[in-house]
Length: 169
Image (cartoon, rainbow, N blue to C red; front, side):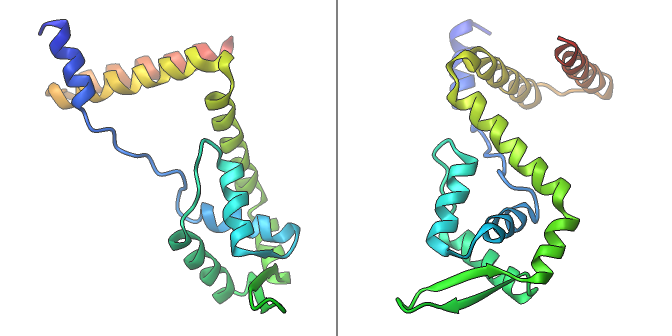
């Protein structure tokens, strides 16, 4: 395949959007934010966007069901303020739940901090480029080759070895 065809293939491959949040992680992040001080939904949307970075803003279709879930489980409570806005605050059940999930909350915050560093720091541009190249190479290989179990194992082994080598730097 000529190089120009390969480039055209790369550009035409749809890039699936990876989920930013695993199941229940948004709920834990919102509960974490509300635990610091009572908040309005707008404040929560803004703070989640600040933590995630890279231009991300959660939709109201994500935040309101999350707030409803947290209220139904009595992790947060709400009250209508003088300005007719709902303000959310953490309950004792919510604090207990956060304490039990503290390790997960720290993992979530660390993950997004690292993500922002890679995207925002010019010194990491080469790393970001290399990560994107690896993802593209894997997508092309998977979509245009009938990989057998041995090839799949070899690819996974090379990626695992690269991770070990990076960790040892």
